[in-house]
Length: 223
Ligand SMILES: C[S@@+](CC[C@H](N)C(=O)[O-])C[C@H]1O[C@@H](n2cnc3c(N)ncnc32)[C@H](O)[C@@H]1O
Image 1 (cartoon, rainbow, N blue to C red):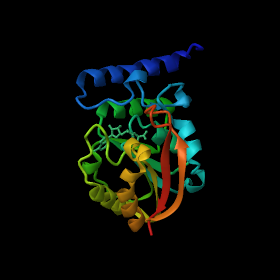
Image 2: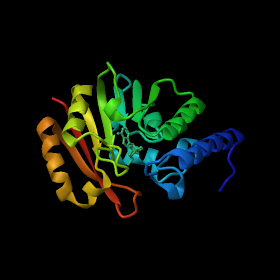
Image 3: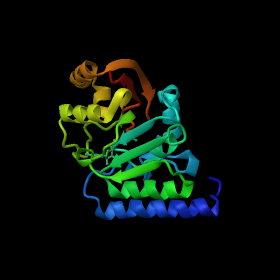
Image 4: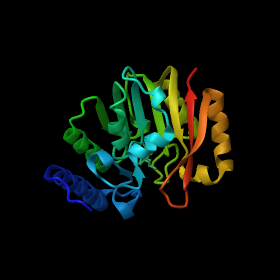
C-alpha cells in the first residue's frame, strides 16, 4: 500500500488511539473488530468493513439530497456517512451511544474542516432537540445486536416520526437478522408502511457481516 501523507498518517494514529481506548474501556459489543473500523472512508484513505462512499452510491439517493435540507443519522458509528453526506446537505446531525466512535468522527471532522455537522455522544433514546429533520437515516440500527437499543420498535418509530418534517424522508437499511430472514422484517414492515409511504425498495451489496452479502434498503416518506 502507498505511504500516507504525514497529515493523514497523523490522523490515522489519532483514530487508532480511540480504537485502543474503546478496546480497554467500552463494555459493549464492538463491531468490525477484525478491521478496527466498521465504516471505511476513502476521503481519508481509511479502510473499514462498510465503505462509506460506495454505500451512498449503492443506495442511489442523491436525488433526495439538496443543500436546503437538514438530516439526522441515528447510531452514526464513526460519523463517516454523516461527514460524507454533509457535502450534499445544509446540515447533518449524528447521534451515537459509543463515545469512542464519536471522538473518531470529531477528529475527522476537524481534519476535514467540516462546519455543517454535529456529532452527539448520546443514546438515541435520550437525544433531545428542538429541530425537525428533512431526512432521517436508520441504517442497520433499529435493534442493535450490542443490546443497547432500549426502545421497542414502536417507540423507535414514534420518535423518528416526531423528528421528521411533513414530507420528509426516512432512509432505512435493515439490521442483519432482518436481512437474512425476511419473516423477521414483516412485522416491522407493516408498522413502517402504516406510518409512512414506501417510495423505494432495493437490495444493496453489503460487506459486513460476511454472512449478509446484501441488505434491504427502503425509502419512506412522512405524509
Ligand atoms: C450496526 S451499527 C450501524 C452503524 C451505522 N448506522 C451504519 O450503518 O454505518 C449500530 C450502531 O448503533 C450504535 N448504537 C447502539 N445502540 C444505540 C442507541 N441506543 N443510541 C444510539 N446509538 C446506538 C452502536 O454503537 C453502533 O455504532
